[in-house]
Length: 304
Image (cartoon, rainbow, N blue to C red):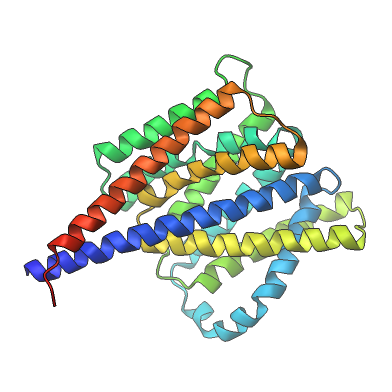
């Protein structure tokens, strides 16, 4: 009994660390995708961006859809599948609309409120245990978000509210992904891509701009990068509890500062750098604690 418990504990900790790694990789890819998307929505409408990126993603997905075609009919909980696709599409739309008016780093900072939503929802509805250390680390990370936003500098604008709405829907979509962890990655990514394609097809005719070949390639690349990022996020949420891996969304602020400076010439001020340091510290605390627990589980496992 002790041996089985130790083995199970070690397996859980290793899965948690793998989930953290995948979440971090997914967030980086999303940051690349977001910077490219902000550059493109300066010329093209949100609907057109969604249409082309989703078409490219489906083209890339086609061989996997054919390979896993039998799993689509077997996918569980169709109502939750549809809700998740809707939430993922709403989040993408909110993000692109927000970055049309706001700097990339500001929008990403608003999105960093997401782990607060996820932690509360995961504890209330998914029954995931959340200790005081994790609550404290998430709260400290959110304090870093507040510092990044320079409290008292200005009232919330409509773009800021849109960004916060995107953050909330992103959190709900991750929770729904966690509840559908028995569903194959191809099914999950396909439905959220199709939902974005439908919304893009509905909106794009109202503000269509014919892109030159270079921009068409970049729009297609947008969809391909987003698809790989979604796979990383989905797999992460299958391997580990949402409240464990989602705090690594905080690392997005690092990429926001770097890409904002390199691509758009946005120079971060002292508030942004201080907030980023707090956020990074909170994320590292959770990671180091998971690694320490994994080592303890390894030491307690009896030799074969």
